[in-house]
Image (cartoon, rainbow, N blue to C red; front, side, top):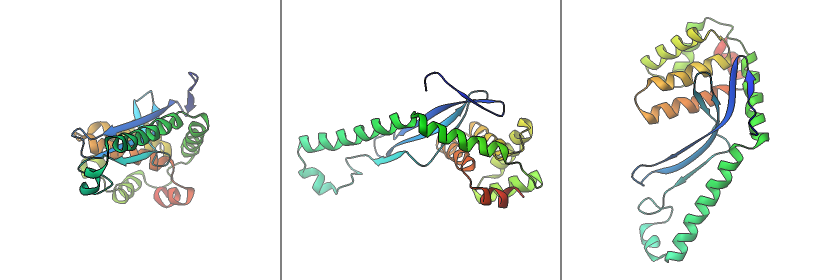
Length: 194
């Protein structure tokens, strides 16, 4: 974004994108925009504004019988359409307006403090988002070590905890949860953090 970064509290934030694809060609292609916090190398992924496409072939959006009838030209056109969508979504992830919306949400989150007992808030968050015991402990530790008892701080603790899990898929889930926490509406945050 023209080399610009924004500061939230004491963090330097840049636009980010997450692109994932099945290693064996039997899953999905997923592209999602997010924020990258440079100081702690955390990544928060936002659900809106991305794309998810199922691969063609055995897991085609059309039946195997129909897919077998398609010409090479039709298959190539279907693939081209997917890659054009991927290009557009990737470009949009670095769009100034989208980045500004994400930064605004992050600034709002930085201003929303945890009002209740921190242990109870993390316990409620763990229950709400089905965190394991180890993940809950990691989130609590990172929240305390980070010293930012706010919605933004909880996001940071969750995305930092994503680096502690062994499963890439679970780490990605926690990165998406970080984006979800940033985007929590005021009323939901108050129920969680009171």
